[in-house]
Image (cartoon, rainbow over all chains, first blue to last red; front, side, top):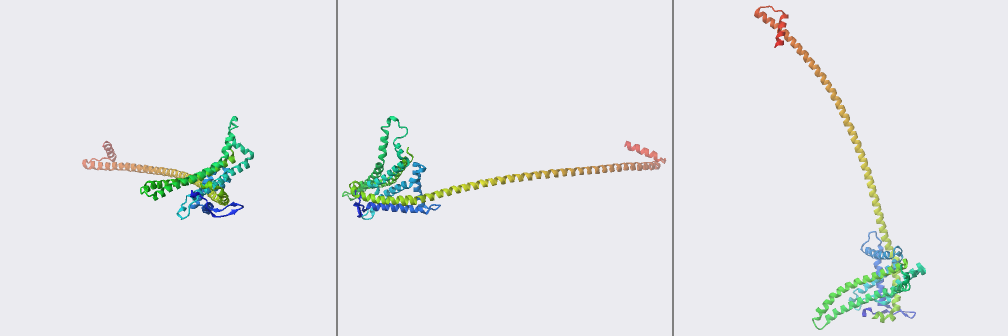
Length: 251
Length: 164
């Protein structure tokens, strides 16, 4: 669990709150810098894009398509938010997979494996839905909880189910990402522990029997974990755009 | 699990730094850089679309030009054919007229020649009778000593020739 530990680097205090610059903050800044550098590569704005520009345009086009298919033409306004969420989660997930451990004393920190971070992201996503929904539809937004074609004799039940499923969205968004990242990293840690402890075992037969299969499995799990990193970022962004669609177009 | 056991000690720092970082990502990258990248993509799409439209227009123009050229070619060819037909008909008519004239001339010449030949033959025949009569008169006179008149000899020659 050491990999999830938050350690202060520069202790800071603001109005009684501890806002120390921690290893978590450091990785957030790293994520920001990575996204920034990546996006600056797309600023060449050439008519015939180079590889880097094509990569940047591929990512922006991907998010654009996702939002426009989920929300429609009105979704253009929300692309920056969905794009920011997608890029932050994607790069933070990948950053946690980087082999910083080869530097003595260093270890990768996965920003998105912290409930505090995923909760803020989920609240941003959910808050946008609430603000947009009430801004556009005023109190009519509550009709979201009464789907079309609800029989009158179910009126006492359906709105409550809908309300409940609506209110649970930020929790599911936050927990899904937090749990996926934490579980993946714990699994990798356990398998890596098998490899190391097998090699350090007194009995000579333990290394080939335990370490080797665990190492092979470790490679596969690492690939899977990289896939999960991308999928979780995609799921978060896709669900956010679907929720925005609810707010923009109701049902 | 540090995420939960540390939560009270670290939430302020996590919120603070995350909000700073995410605000930078949203305002600088999401609102600053992203629209420029999109604008570049849109500009390229527009450029491609306009280029395609221009190419399509050029193609239509070329097809129209080719059609006009074909029409002109067909017209010219028809005119040339008509001209050639006319020239051929005229040449044939001329040739026929000349042929007819030549035929007439040849026929006239042949007639003249035939008449001349007939006259010459008649003259020759007449001459032959006279010569034969003279010869007969002389022969008779020499052989028998009888004087035969020219009229009698001529009559005898005539009778012999017509019999012969």
